[in-house]
Each structure stands twice: as C-alpha cells, then as structure tokens.
Image 1 (spheres, helix red, strand yellow):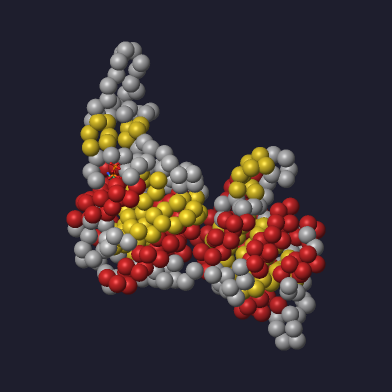
Image 2 (cartoon, helix red, strand yellow):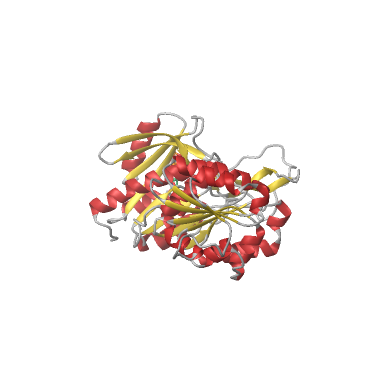
Length: 403
Ligand code: CTP
C-alpha cells in the first residue's frame, strides 16, 4: 500500500537518528518514494550521505538552496508529499511546531503543508514527561498531527524509561494508517473496548485480562479512515486514541447505559469489550475485613449488551468478538446467530500471539452466510484494518443507514 507514495521524512537531532536509516530502507522496500529533510543537529548523528544513499534522493538540509531552478524548497517538498513523518522528533521540533516557529527547512516545511503528518518522539524520559513537552504534544495532537507513543526500555543515557523511538514496524503501520483512504467518511461508528470492573468493596473488584488494545486499535483505525468514532472504554492504561468522543466507564452496567444511550446515533457498532458476565450481588460500602474464616461471593448476571443491541439494531452493522479457549468456530458461530450480529471476530486465547494484552492477534472472521476467514498472526492495528474492510463491504451491500 506504500507503492508510489511520496513520503517526506524529517530527521531531527537525537541519538535515534540512526534508526531513520532503517525506516527509510523499510519505506523504500515497500515501494515508497522518500525525500529526507535533516536538521543541522541531525547531521551530527547521521550523515546526509547515508540518507541520500538509502533514499536514492537528494537530501535537504538547507533552507536557502533551491530544489531546482524554480522551486522553493519548503513549498516543493510540501507539494511532493503524500505524508510527512518526523522520526526521531526531538522536544525541540515538537516545541517549534506547537509554537509556530519556522527557523530552518524542516520546521518551515511542516508549517507550510497540510498533509497527514506523523510525529515519532524520541528523547530522554524526563524530557518527555516534562509538562511543557507534554503540553506541546497535546497541542499538536489537537491540531491534527498524529503523535506516536514513545516506547519504553533502555535509553541512550543509560536510564530506563519511556522515550525510545517506537519500533520501525509500528511506525510503518502508522504511516500506512495515516495514508489510508477516508473510506469511512460520513460513517458513524461506536466501539466498546477494555474490561469492566465489578466492585466488591471500595478496594476490590472482579475483572478480566482485557487490555483494550484491540478496541483502541479499531477506534483509531476508524477515525483514521474518516469515521466519526465514539469509543466507550472500560478501565485501561492506554493513551486515548484520536476519536470524536470517548466515554469512560467502569462497570458493565455503566457500559450498558453508555451503549444504549449512543447506539441509535451510529451506523456501525463494534463490541470489542470484554464485559464481565457477572457482578457481585452487593457492593459493600466498607472494606471487607479478613476476620471471617470463610467467605462466599454471591454474583448476579450483568446485562448482555450486544444481545440487546442485536434485537433493535435495524440496518446498523453489528460486529462482536468471541474469545474462546475451546471449540472456537462452533462457539463463535452460535454467538453470531444468537446475538444477531452481522460479523463475529473470533480468537483463541490458547494461541501464541492472540488474545489479551498482546500487540498481535490471530483472528477468524465469520459472517452470517457462514463464510469463515482465518487470518494469520498480525498486529492489532493490522487486524483492525481488515475488520473495517469487511464492515465496509457490508455497508456497501446493506446501504449505509440507521433505523
Ligand atoms: N458481550 C456483551 N455483554 C456481555 C457479555 C458479552 O455485550 N454482558 C459481548 C462482547 O463485547 C462480545 C460478545 O458479546 O462482543 C461475546 O462476548 P464473550 O465474552 O465471548 O461471550 P459471552 O456471550 O459472554 O459468552 P461466554 O462468556 O459464555 O463465552
């Protein structure tokens, strides 16, 4: 999907600049045309010659050297690009973008363009968590720049923390996502994600292993493809994806209410949340003390949210998930029919690389005609893309519309 796409890669001065070489190779390998802009400090970490050799293009470093006889560099590069990527992005370039400073070729070019732009911060962990840097990141996100989360691990300064450049395959996924066509423009999508928590007392609760990663990937992919996405999320530690609206809930009852309040407004409902099927019959106001020898919990059933939506879905597309440990296909097919879904995405918790908390998933998509599509291991972002492709086909067939 990157074939013949024009990418302008901005490299700024951080130790991760050497990884921009690897990113360039990955882009070229997938058929993209890459033009590189380097800041003066980037040149202290990696040479323009390296980047010229890998990108097979002239490298741009100077504001005042014209691209060719007639073009002005920052305008010509802005015209050329289908997308801009800054990797690594220092606190300095983020600050400049947030404040409207254009004092070199990269900052000026970024200001003079309106293409999808991906910023991949990489810096020392304390620098990254500095409130000013965080404020700048929030500011540029609000304007519409896509800012990736830095990875955690060992940093060049020998400390451990958050601040590493995201892994190259993740950057590649994100570049593909921002370049994806806006084929969900005008479509409203509601997505549920994460676990629910069912409190026993003020300090304890029943929950499950869901991290929310699959639902968040779907929300972010839907938004990226132009949908108006509403995300209803149980408690997770994930950063909020860029969507129209996020409703944070804790319990299944709260999720139930949020879904019922919102599903009539949308065309597509995707229920990726792992809703707790049971909740404690009573939630104690005070902490349960350990002075009794035996304790038994009385549980009662939570509402089955997707079944209720299934009964009144009208023309809406309803997609559910099935997480199984055995009889994957039979169980998933039963859920598809009994809950009146249009598609079910099944995954087997026992398979390596599938299920909760991983960044990858191995999914099987089943539709109402009984068609079974088993997909190999892919990232959750990749899986989200395929699920949306299948939803898109159904939207085309059914004719988008509520009621
Ligand atoms: N679901 C829901 N409300 C519930 C339970 C599940 O909306 N109270 C939805 C999930 O979001 C998912 C689908 O139903 O899209 C299937 O969830 P799953 O937990 O796999 O199935 P259950 O119906 O709960 O059946 P079981 O736990 O017996 O496998």
